[in-house]
Length: 245
Ligand code: 13P
Image 1 (cartoon, rainbow, N blue to C red):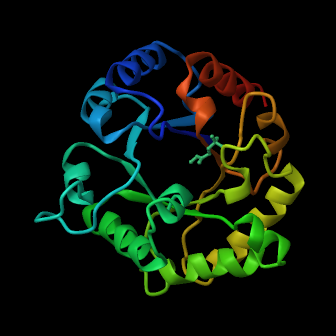
Image 2: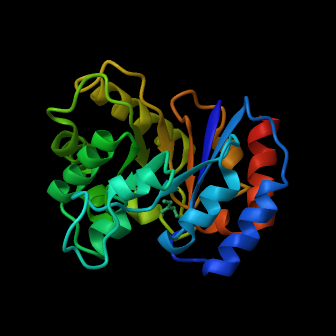
């Protein structure tokens, strides 16, 4: 089983989201082999969720607020997303960290809020180009894991997405051998914090051409795809590539 998670970011307006969601709803694929997850904008979330309710396709939030309710202009809480049917939520995506200034502490609060309400958080981690060039890749990843996972129950259900910041939206995907090696490092590190088997996804310029290289690696449980996931034909060929592996 591989996970194919589509992070639509802010690529699609409401009607574009619904057009793509309806196109995907008519696609048939082997649901034993792939779990498809969609992460629409907050605006489209409830309608996309309604469309896929009761189907094998899961719908998740791109971001959550940690306090259940209150005076937090612009925020939508993990609790509200849970009530609206979210299975998953991305937390700590690098665009949230580096464009919106989220700290590891913010990410921890969001992660804990998801667990509290019964959403499976997908903890996004990744090193910057500067980290990479300074030989600090593992240091950065372990720190991002530690700040969030220390103190979390060993039975908690969550995912990790390894998304090198330099690979996101650049067309410069991480080499598959390197990615597989880093996934092994992440999985080793996760043993410190959990007794669960945690799926680790790769994200960063994944497309229908390069996805085949990652597929044979056991340590890569699936993909978190950005721009290629916001277009029907690309999703179709991504699904086909994963199914053919
Ligand atoms: P791209 O696939 O566009 O590089 O984005 C990856 C990503 O950020 C998914 O969360």
